[in-house]
Image (cartoon, rainbow, N blue to C red; front, side, top):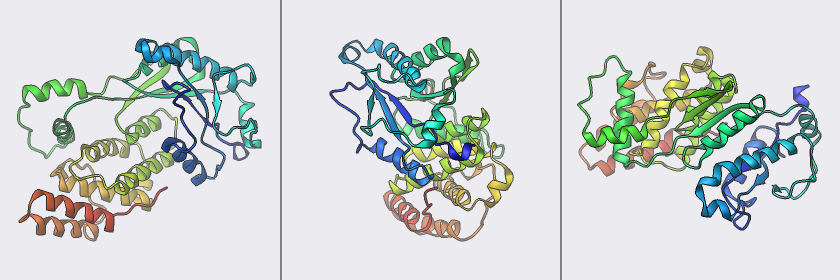
Length: 335
């Protein structure tokens, strides 16, 4: 009975060394525990950490191989071969499991590897798919690139408007922007031994591809949308940040994979969509929205008034008004 089974805990394969450990009070560990508690699994979170060694700090090109070796060790642990490993560290300090976790471990374990494109995680994923293809459900790689913020915003605006039929054609890009685009563009997704390798910029992009591959439900993807939107608002991310446009682009793609009923009736999803409408309005990208406004008045009208009243002021005042609007009118509760 799936209702009596707890989800397996998260394992971390890290380039860190044991001398600089990932502590239970670190942000990532706290966040994982909070997610578990919110969803009714108070014992869920990061359980096992497998570290690298000084060799990987000195010889950077060995990181991928070391992570794969640690993954092989993790497979043994997931299969019940406990007590033989010295590298894994338990954050809980105990080997006790809940009944639901113990029942989950009695089934064959399959893995999803989540890494990025800057730490040889692609190499690790390819080793996993070549050596243990039947154990892998997917590889997700966060695309990391270092380009100036202004270039990132221009590229995202172009991407959003290219798919908008009523939008005018953008001007010809400068040579510098063409070079930045080569680094910024997402690598092509592919399959290796039937294991999908999926690249993403934001967690909304990852959720969109996970829904497409049947790895998560549309309801789970909607929770990702709401959590990501709420976090951006909580952090008071500036309206000029490309992070908002990144999320807008991925939300537009994800919407195509969500049921129409959910898009029309999920109250938290509707709030998040309204936030993205406001983001597009402030950035001059309303034409890039492929959906009609859910509510023509209310918050949208208030934002329009704020922008009109700040046109006579500086750009800084307009951004301050935007941030003030978000903090007072568009709070999205966490899922």
